[in-house]
Amino acid sequence: MNRLEKQLSLVMELDKLKSILRRTRVKSAENRLENSAEHSWHVALMAILVEEHANESVDIARVVKMLLLHDIVEIDAGDTFVYDTQATQSQKENELLAAERLFTMLPEDQQEELFAIWREFEAAQSADAKFAKALDRLIPMLLNYHNGGKSWLENGVSSEQALTVNRKIEEGSQVLWEHAKKMIDDATQRGWLIAQQGK
Image (cartoon, rainbow, N blue to C red; front, side):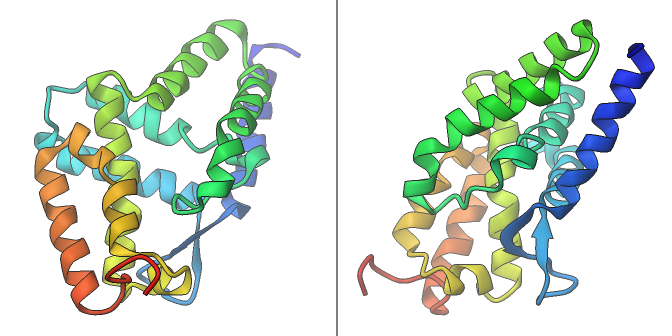
C-alpha cells in the first residue's frame, strides 16, 4: 500500500468508533447512549472553548489531537466504564494492543508521532495531557448532571466514587474541579448519586 492508501485505510477503520456505545446518554436525545466518536468530537470542541481554565499554559492543538485520538483504541478494546473497577484492571493492556494495531496501519512517520501523542495522554504527566484528561473526565459528568443523573442512577454510582474517580480533573484545571465538586454535591442532594457507599 502507498502512503495515501495506508492513511485512508485507517480513516475507514476509524468509522467503527461510531458504533462503540458508552454508558453516558446524550443530552439532545436522553434515551440514546453516546458513542465514542461523538464523545471524542465533543470533548475536543470543549477543549477549545475552555482552554483559559487550564492550570498551566497548554498547546491547544496538541490537546485537541490527544482528545481526538485517545479513544480510537475502543474499536478493539471497547469502552470501559470509569466506575467499573474490575474492568479497568485489564483496560491498559487491551488498549495498548489496540493502539499498536491501529497506529501501525499508518506510514511510519505518522504512526510514531500519533502513537507518541496517545501515550502522552495515557501517562497524563505533561500540562497538555493533564488538561486533556481533566476534560475527558468532566464531559461525562456534565452530560450525566444535565440528564438528571440517568447514567449514575442506572449504574448505582456513589458520590464517593464520583469524587475519587474524577479527582484527575484537579490536575488539569482547578477551576473545572471546583465546578465538578459543586455538580457532585448537588447531584448527591438530588439523589442522583448515592450519598454513601453501600446505602
